[in-house]
Amino acid sequence: MSEKPIILAELEQAQQKALALLAEIQDEEPLQAWKREYLGKASTVMSAFSSIGGQPKEFRPLVGQVANQVKQALEAALEQRARIVTEAALTRKIADERVDVTLPGRQPISGGLHPQTLVLRRIFAIFAEMGFQVYRSRDVESDEYNFELLNIPAHHPARDMWDTFHIDQPGVVLRTHTSPGQIRVMREQAPNPIRVILPGMCYRYEQISSRSEIQFNQVEVLAVGKNITFGDMKGTLNGFVRRLFNADVRTRLRPSYFPFTEPSAEMDVECFVCGGKGCSVCKGSGWLEIMGCGIVHPTVLKNGGYDPEVYSGFAAGMGPERISMLLHKIEDIRYFWGNDARFLEQF
Ligand code: DAH
Image (cartoon, rainbow, N blue to C red; front, side, top):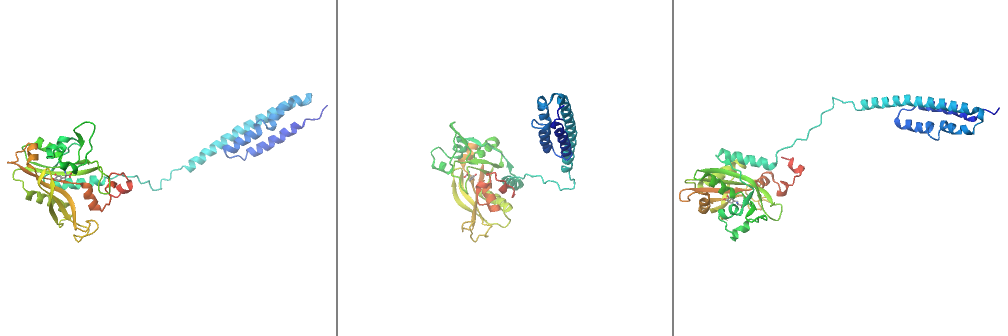
């Protein structure tokens, strides 16, 4: 009779060792490593199976039997341990993710109104108090309305005042100013009296700089009726400027030129930064230019359907971005439409 094969003792040792180690395992990863070590191809159990053929004949069944028992014992233990490990992981996860209801809530990010919406609303409110309604005209205009009907014929040098976006279709432009809306309201309302403001985006094919953008808002003012005078214009615009800036601000009208008004003027307000002494904001002049204005040109009235012998009117045009820049001491007009939250959230 041959000696008892050494593999039998090895199997017993391996089982003991494996079970002892398994009992210590807490995590999935070491569990897998354990499985490779004690049930994998190179494990004692597996090599016991492959050793059977080389064992003395009378021990072969025994080796097979013992190897099977060990294998089953290890597999059963592994299964049990795996359940414990999974449960422990779940318990840990629940504990870690427990909601602490006493923590302060997360502050939601709240949006705000755009600075231009805010100034426009102020402008609308002030004019509303004086009986002016808001009239919205179109952004895409015809050459006829943007220029011709406003007394700016083709090839007239005054067209140089507005660098224009043209499109492939002849006679179609992006409005360079809100003034074409004047004709549209007049044609709609004639011969009724008009008091409107026309706000909206304007577009110019211009070199972009800290003072000019290719798109910007304008607010046009138009009053048409009988006996409307330059004095009415001055009173209305002064009333507006004083409500917008402050009640004591001084204004002045400087003669100017626009093809659609005669006479034409620029309205300046006393620089509210230096009080008129001269500073960097007003470039030493003590005055800030705020809008163009004038008495509606007879040709424009006629184009709008009003008899210039019977009716008269005044008009004005201002840039609310420029007004914002003055109100908030903003140095660059490009901030308004640059979509930088760091700028926008300051309002
Ligand atoms: N449309 C002019 C511009 O964009 C601004 C303007 C000036 C409008 C005088 C007016 C006005 O109504 O009377 O430069």
